[in-house]
Length: 148
Image 1: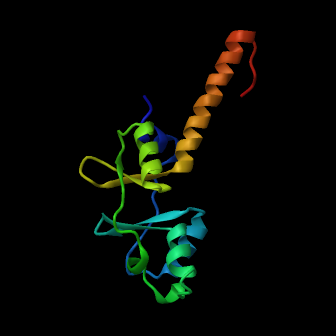
Image 2: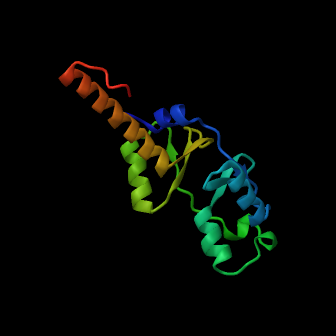
């Protein structure tokens, strides 16, 4: 059974983070620079919160607040759902679905951040697996290489 650890091995475990005292503008610029949709908010290497594009849109832009004048701490989501790296893909998908979130920090047994996955990472992992299965089935049925 595939685990979150397998997904992290494929995509990498780099996590972009920001401090809670940074401005929302700084967070948005960092997300844009790295083409990511969320940042983990850390305090002394512990997860304090998460800030995502959706949070910026709803709690800053839609409220007509200047992102340079408000801190990450003022708008971040403090109740952060996490999963362990040995969680199954199905467990992670369930968290995404049931909690209606798109980013999920991954922690080790000591609660330390070891990576972050998105719903897109899970979808990509499963699509890749399905493409491989299709390739092998075609090869089995037709005795030819399909070049995937």
